[in-house]
Image (cartoon, rainbow, N blue to C red; front, top):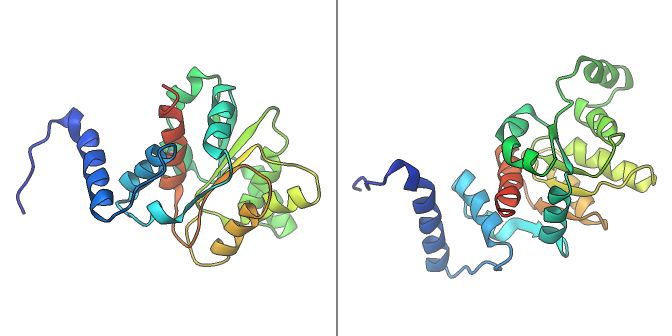
Length: 209
């Protein structure tokens, strides 16, 4: 295998060309309106399974774009996802990204109530003003908490990006979101991660121009 000489500012473009070619070679043709997002998930992970496992609720892409253009807040379940989201681009539309996971009072409340910090963080986020996009890449209990608030009619998220990674309750928690009328992008199965949550947010932001 020989090294390919690529100029630094051409590396990402070349990566997407390779992804497109490999998908075509595998006989996989992505929906035109979703290809940009699926390819960015693949680009982030080098995992072509995302071409098959990413689920989009009806009209999800358009709904997410409108929320971002309207200055929606993004709430993540990890500081890693928060760090990976392009805050400069988000700020152009009046939006911001928050994560409550590391706050001391969240940790205290979670311990006192026997909950995870992710669940308490979701409750905290539900009290924010304006539309909120939840970008969940780590904690399935965040998705469970959102579904519980939805079922109690306490709160309905504006949008959920549900891509937690792992083995315990991960697949079931994702299905809990899919089985609602909440607009969502969810990766079925065990795969996901904070990097994927951030990549999906960035794909949507970059598509706004």
